[in-house]
Length: 159
Figure 1: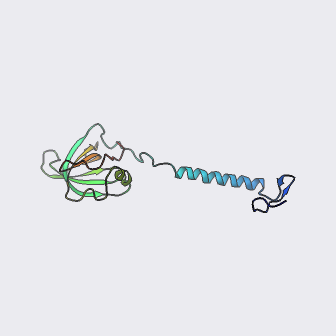
Figure 2: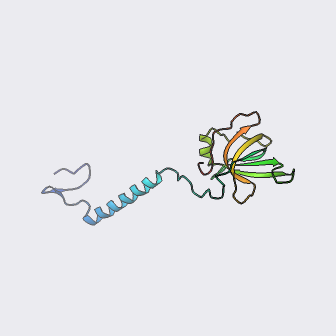
Figure 3: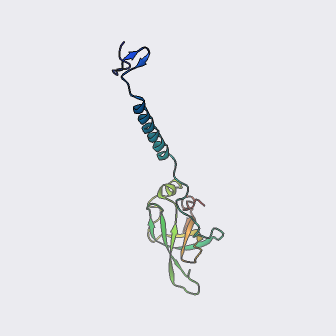
């Protein structure tokens, strides 16, 4: 009988006699299963949150108006460093606020670009503030000095 599909298996009474043994087939099935399982895991979408947003007070919204010191387009989150005058109670001193956004990919899908904010830009930002009162928050939305909305909301916790 001719070889099957180019392989040199020999058929005797309807069975391949020099093909893989039962043990070899078992190993091949396990290897194939492992490859399929790891491929399935690799193709899953991003996890909705890799850490908790419990440090932010989701019940409160603060409006901060200030000057951008730095816009950090980095993984795992983008950050806005905002200099806000008079934000410390009882003082006119400028306080630097660290505003956490989502990942660069999520922020970009919301209409932001690496150059959306530049040092010196005046903006107004809505944030969920830190629970412990430190000058930081979770990004909700932002507007330029002329009132234009900057991108869409892209917070770290998907809020």
